[in-house]
Image 1 (tube, rainbow, N blue to C red):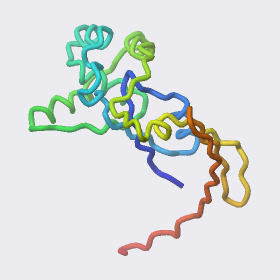
Image 2 (cartoon, rainbow, N blue to C red; image 1 turned 120 degrees about the horizontal axis):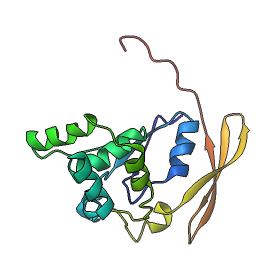
Image 3 (cartoon, rainbow, N blue to C red; image 1 turned 60 degrees about the vertical axis):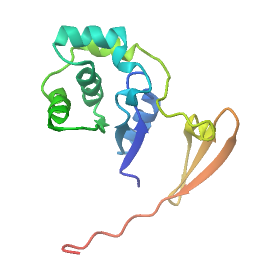
Length: 164
């Protein structure tokens, strides 16, 4: 089975259904573009900036902390040791319930990465039909332009050999 699902995830693009589906199956969610990659004004959001002011933190630290508190794994970039230390500070504080709820309510659905050629695939939602027969799962993949039924065959990996 998959161990990790890497998806774009930040306060303006959070898919609770996808995260829940992954959790039900024991799949970790890893978040790329956790700050919107500079393509979106996530860090300039009034709510994010106000929470950062209240917490005495940077907007980037607030966004990273929000993901961490949701049990997600943000993938961050660091240009230099100072930037790395700044990112690590997201591990040294917590958002209170009201602050986390305020970020949850931002509710925008904006992506930092939106390739028009791949738009149909990127916006697809995968819904398991809950049919499992001999390690097979059926999924319906829907987007605005396409409908595709997919059957996924799962095999158990052989146990790894020690020292191999």
